[in-house]
Length: 474
Image 1 (cartoon, rainbow, N blue to C red):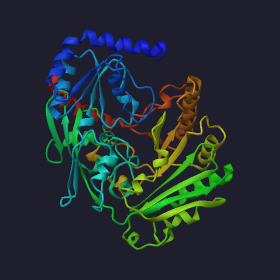
Image 2: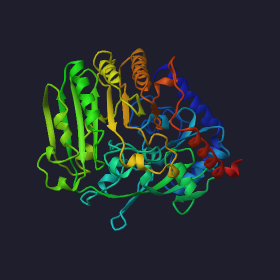
Image 3: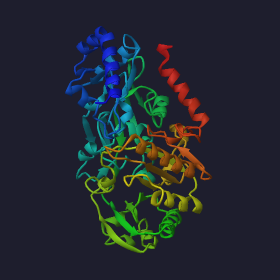
Image 4: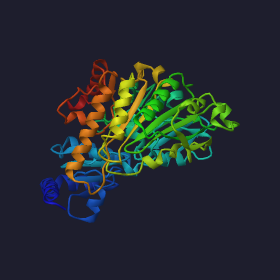
């Protein structure tokens, strides 16, 4: 531990001592446990539970809750005797931002119960569940829920921020498929949000993240995934012109992609390949022999490139295979990740983007992934959520990842590279920020954009909803 970390730990321990009485009272009220800042292995392990290996903070205390009553106790303490501390919420722990310095952290990992109602086609999961864990409860049912493509991602954080995956073009964002949520609001009260009960709060939760309280349970729609057919195409494209041509072809060919199909391109830094992922849930997938037999995958044959050394397509088990298709790129790492939604993806932008990933990259751990949006996403009712990027065509994730022993200077170079990627994508492509807790390089760069994840009207609506449910504190 270096001197800086020693100081941070010392600050957390000092605040723990300052609030010793209040923390003791909180601990005695919990069915779960409370870990107070110290130099113990238990505390150090508790603050490092996140998927991203990035610098986790030094909280004053970590509350490992066991039930919704524990969450209520923490929220009331945070609004009362421990109000001097920041309140952090760790659900799936995908982001290192959930554990910050000098905070009171609510660890929801213990809220992990899952129930499946196959007749009503609903799954209900505790807010500490990860996507992969919920998927396992649906093995061999032929049913799946709209969610992301990394099984280690927390279900709750992803859903509340929108949530995009293989089923989204047919069924909308993950949040569109959330029919009910149990939430502890700022007063400490437990509230149910659904279409028939506190419907305005449900709208706010659909895209509003954790701004309205701590969600403890979600209920999501299930859909038929029995006909899943898909796979991976790896295209050899060692030149910038060849790689750019593949991206342009993919962009044009997916403009009319059937809504029961999904596709994404991966551009790994420093590697002479372009990877294309494709999946379809068309009923013809049950008997198809090759991707060319299916309207949602036949376009992949026309992408181009020098060769196709990887061609792995076939009938897939949705949970065991399709949901794990991007797993090689989803391993825990020191991850600097951000995302944008784009209305356009111009030729000039594509060529410059390929140059950034082929010639100007900092780390070969980095990658840019482009997903095709549209379909049911664009159809989703704007009156039932507060998301502002429904009408966009492309969702772009860009990662400036680095290794454990890379220097701080290398990390800064990764951030600079991410800034270049964002500047390029925003320039002339009508970009919209994504409301995810990611590393936005523009917030610390010399050339900045106003973070525009929410339109002014959506911000106003969100503020009104929050004021209503926070009312007893004002």
